[in-house]
Every structure is written in structure tokens, then in C-alpha cells.
Amino acid sequence: MKRTITLFCLLAFLCFIPNAVAQCTTAPNGIFPSNAFTPSCNGNYETITNQGWTGEYSNVNVIANKQYSFSSSVTTDYITITNDSGTVVYASGTQPVMWDSGSTTGVIRYYLHSNASCGSEQVNRSRYIRCADASNCAPPSNLVVSNITSNSCKMTWTAASPVPSTNYDIYIVTTNSAPNANSTPTLFTTTNLTTTLYLNIAAGTTYYYWIRSNCGATTGMWVSGGSFTSPAALTCNGAIYGLYPNATFTPACTGSTEQIVADAYAGEYSNVNVLSNKEYTFTSSVSTDYITITNADGTVVLASGQTPLVWDSIATSGVIRYFLHSNANCGTQETNRVRSIKCQDSTPPCNPPGQFWADNITATTAVLNWTSVTPTPDTYLYLYNTEPTIGGIDGNTTSTSTNIDNLSPNTDYHWWVASVCGNDQTQWVYCGSFTTLSNASGCWETISAGYTHSVGIKTDGTLWAWGDNGYGQLGDGTTIAKSSPTQIGTANNWQSVSASGGFTLAIKADGTLWAWGNNTFGQLGDGTTTNKITPTQIGTSTNWIRVATGEGFV
Image 1 (cartoon, rainbow, N blue to C red):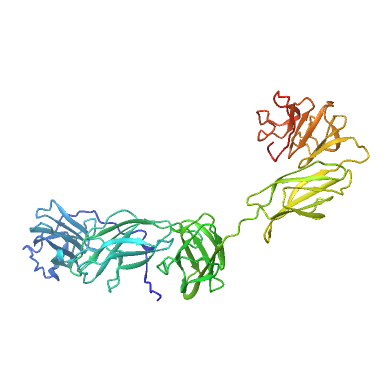
Image 2: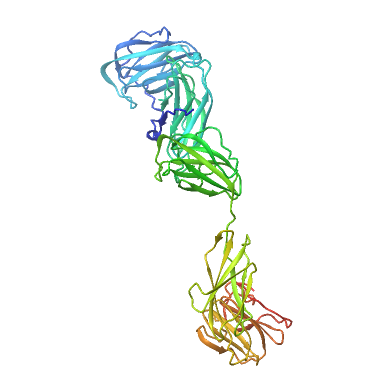
């Protein structure tokens, strides 16, 4: 059955009246009445005088183990209670002032002033006192705050024994300043002496809280519950109607929609047990409702959006909070709706491949290459075209390379690759371009195409390059792009070459290794991160056989 919540708003109590510290022990109007007053201690207020002035005091006979309440007919009057000589202050504050006599017996002084600045007035007012047995008002215990959100919390405690005759007093403030017997409670519980309160609070605020029994004629001692800090206001992580239902819901994860509750409100949350590597769908029966999923404390938003909301738990397991609101402005509605959840195995992500290069280029054929990704796709799709727009001849493969043929000699080709995972396909990724050899010359031994430049070796062992030259990757001593093959140096003993994204590596017939172009990540291997615009020998080894380049590495 839906519970009824009574909300007590604390937002207006961010600054509370502090405990008074003034001690007014002056009496320019002397003592009045002249005789010491002896209360009957029947639990009722008794009148000491109806002709009291401020700036005077009365003597009162007190006995041990009683609770005394001192008050005035003027609500702003200030009261100070001292020993019989006025040298020791027992209690003070704006009326009424409560004081437990403890072991004190005999005469005490009851000073009355018009304010905490010890003002005096020769204007009549009534001076009252109440005496009751202090031991009859037992305190409650086990004061706890739970279900804390950015705008609400639940406060519970164990009832006093015996139960107080009037109510429980709550004192909750934002500074760690303990109340005393004269502190004004910030909240009173309802007269049915409930032991649970639902409170509205401010976001990102630390609260300190106490409780005591109020037995009418007397009040018990304050019991501290400690402190708590509300979460910062995030994406609808508040719940003015609190937690509902109280029990944490654990989905069966059968892939079917399960009902958490049929009488949910907008402006409350549920706790849900989740497993890692599952896909959860959170749904409300009101199509415009807004859902927020957070960690167990409501301090981290994991997902949010209009119903239905889909969330992959990935590594998250344990309890999460499922907040429900009527709109993206965190609206609330005290009308029933069905709150549901579906749990099923999550679908692995489908990622595109990377690190692309073309090699083994001839006049009519080439090999397109890329590196695999995790998880491995079911298949790869590829496209190639003589124009830099997606389209043209397509194909598919389960490998990370594919041979293409029937190409036109001396032609620029652009190509793209995508991953396919079940029914999902990634976006096409542009892989760059390459140029086929010319049938007419027949002088090319090998060609390698990088992302934006190409290099080749002719049958006479000379090295040639063309394309983008922003990093000096052509090796001609400049950073100027070339639109046609340009011989690099005069050496005629080049054996193999490999181009990548902004740099080039090659091996000479004598087994030495050479590199040039972009060296941001040290990919040239010369021990520096300085770009090279001409072929530079790497080390002194003469036994290099084969070289291949990746994207930013060799």
C-alpha cells in the first residue's frame, strides 16, 4: 500500500538563531519582590509577580533534580539564572529559559532584562516559573538519517520509554553548534508521536541534528544523531517523496519487462540491484516522464533521459538509484504511474578498424590493409573509388586485408573501411589514397602509399616520392608537396620502402635502415623527436631485411 509522507521543509532554516551567550547579572531596579519565591513544583506555571520590571531580579528557592522553566509575559525579555550571589551563571537566554537544577538546592537569582544587551524598563510585566520532575522525560535513541538525496532525507529514531506526553523536538542546523535546554527546536514531530520524518533539505549542504522528548511540563536532554551531507544538485537526483518501495528491487534479467511498482510518484526513487555487463531499460507508464540513474549515494549520474531509458551497466554492479520525475525540469506529481525495468545481456560495442595502408601496388592491383579492433567484428566492408567521395566498388572480408584488382594504371584511388557486428555497422572510415603504377614505363620495382603521400623504387634502384610533404616525408629537403614523382637524392641502391601517415622508412641494398618525415612520437627511431626532411640513417646495423610502417609507429 502506498505510504503517506509528511514533508517538513528545512530550506528556511539554513541560518538558525544561535544559542545566547549574554550574561545579564545587573539589576538597576533591585530585587522584587523582596521575599524569596518557593514554587510548588506541580508541573504548572506559577506567577511570581504581575508587577515585574526589567533590570531587576527575584530570589527563588529551588530543590535538586527538577527542571525549571522561567518566562515573562513580554516575549522578547531576556532571562539570566545565577547562584544566590549572582557570581555564577547557570542559564541564560530569551524567554522561556529551561534549567535543570541537578544537585543545586537553596536560593537562586532570577534576573529579567528587556533584551540580550541587559536593557531595563520600568514597565510592568508578569514573571512566571514552572517546576517539574526532570527525570520523567526519557530521551529517544538510535537517531539516524537515511535515503539522502539532493533535496530530501528520512529521519528515524527509537521511541523513548516511557513515550513523551507531548511530542519530540528536532534541532537541525548547518553549523556544529549543540543546542541547550533553552534552544528553540527547528521542527516538532506530529502529535501522534511518529518516529519517522521525511525532510526537504538543500543540495550540497552539511547538516547537524539532535532530538529530545517533550513531555509538556518538562523536556528531556538533547540526543545527537551526528551529521550528514546532501549530494550536490545534478540531473534530477532529488526525490521530495523519498524512497519507494523501501525494499531494493532485483530484476530477474530474463529479457522481459518487470514491474517494480504500480503506484509510483514522480519525485521519488527506487533502489535496484544491477549486474555488470547487462543492458537495462527503465520505463514509466507516463510517456513524458524523465528518468535519472545514479550510483547508490545519488552523487554520480550514470544515465538520464525521457522514458524509456536504456543503460549499459558495463562494470557497474550492486545498488543503483532509479529516479523518476514528470519532466526534464525535475517536476513532481503525486499521481500513480507504473515503474518498470527490463534486464538483458548487453550488446558489445561495434568499433571501426584503424591504422590503414596500401602496399604491393602494381598497375592493376593493390593490397588494402588495416588493424583489427576489440571486440572483433563479424566482417569488414570496404569501398574504393577514383573520387574522394564515399561510393564506388565495394566488397567484404573477415580478414584485416584484401586484394583488389582490375584497377586502372597510373590512377589515384581513395578507399574506406567499416566494421559490421551482427545487425550494426559503424560509419565508414576514410583510409587515404594510393596511385597505381604506369603500364607504359614498366620501370617501377615497388610502390608504397601512405595516408597522403606515396614513395616508389624504380628498377634502377633510384628512390622517388610525391604527394603531401608537410613533415618532409618526401625526403627532398623541403616541405613542399609534389604532384608528380620526384627523385629523392641520387642514390641508386634502394631496395625497399614503406610510407605511413607523415613519415617514410626504407632499406638500402647494403642492409642499412633509413627514415625521414614526422618524428613527433620518435617513430623514426633516431633517438629524437625531431622531424627529418631528408633520408637519415638509423643506427649502424647492416642486416635490415624488411620494414613496415604503422600510424605513428614502425
